[in-house]
Amino acid sequence: MVNSSNKRVALKRKLLFALLMSLVTVNIVSLSILLINHVPTVVFFEKWLTSISVAWPIVFISILLIAPWLLRLTEWIVQETPSQT
Image (cartoon, rainbow, N blue to C red; front, top):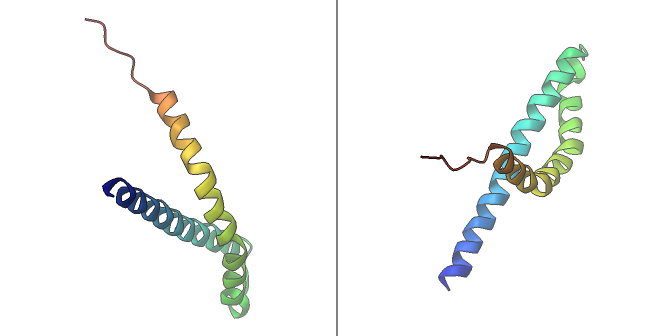
């Protein structure tokens, strides 16, 4: 049972990380794009919410699917070679 409990905790961590990372990323990118494009203050909040609602699910799923592969790639690129003594 300990093993399944560890798997549940690992899944919760993975989902929470993807949720938080996607939320932060989407907000930074959406805000930046709206500011760069000089969106008028009157419609800024509406445009921001619209862009977040479209982008957040895409980024969330992308992080869930791509992050594990990128972590493995990173480990492969940065793997240490055994030191020769």
